[in-house]
Length: 245
Length: 289
Image (cartoon, rainbow over all chains, first blue to last red; front, side, top):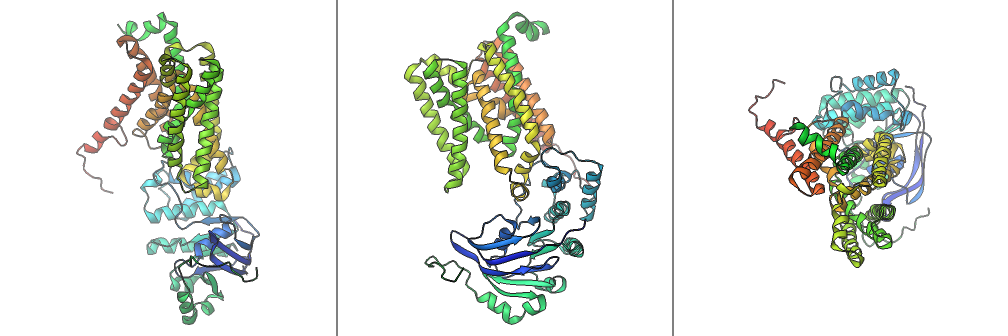
């Protein structure tokens, strides 16, 4: 499973809802094979940014270029937990691109699914209905599905929120494995100590990019304060942005 | 005794055999579709769409009287139009899909009844609303059987993306653009099955053999394939039981079939092997792990 490294390029990107920008005039590049944390206060546009990269939200202005296939784990994945489907079948969905509507699963695929389930530590849970999983187990299952998607760009939106330490460290091991395979990984996180210890690159965002680069240069007291001060609320009387597009 | 009760009615009367073929076709076609409607929390949407068929069938009736092709085409057009329109309104406005479906089906139901009364007698109105399972002619049976076969094939083809769209619509959107197509194809399946059912059970009860067996099946298994099997079986059982019961007791056939399905549902609530109430009430000690 060797990913071909690929970059994400932002050209003066503004993303938002109803003309109000949530991410404002972002320009820059996430390097191929890099491991980037996106941090910032609530409402800073972090999830919106990932949505934009994943192609689920069209930019109001500017362009986002991704040079490879993107796999995206949204913050609250809208999985219907009451649907009667097994962990195995949920994870197997990761092979959708390979098998599409009708393709059957061969022995190789079954091995891949079993490996993915083992990699997230859910062996033995294959036949459990997803409704019976705990929050952490569900997140493990979704990571297994991500593994099978085999994408070169992987977007994780607060993957470790409400997750215990053991699960978090298991899932982080998978993130490191992706990094070692030279996939481009972008993760929204709130735990700054974790970001410092694990993520070489950081984008600090508060609607606009506050700082972007090597984690230790970005996460300074001064930058963090600046991010916190940026207005959170939409201004209902805002006029059209005059900044050159 | 058994012969007299179970076999003789079918051996002696052609209309009974036709009714049986009709409900078998309905169970095979509509049962599996009902399972997906239920799992998608669209049980009431199925009901609403059944009513939405009425004005189309009524226009067909105005043009050509109680004519199979006209009422079928009219019903299809109206059903699909309401499904698409309510979906479009839900996407374009602040209304959720259930609200817009409710609005459209009330409109349809009142428009349909008005249209039928413009020309017809109350007997015709009753026929349209409650069907005539004991008066199915050859073309109608062909239509119902054809619909059942087509529906089963279509569902088999749609199965994988449909399950994905139910479990995790966001994921399907992120890996494939087929979500909308799958959703529309599924709605079309619902309408087609309801139109086939409406000839036998009428617009008000057509949805009965679709939803009640599917809802009852939820009490017997935790996997989708199993649910489809149970739902189809329950549909067949209710159809057979309803026809026989109505024959022996002199009850109206369509409603009796649906009552039987309702009986299956009530029994399932109580005795269901998965989530039945009785099972829950059994004094069983919790497990070790």
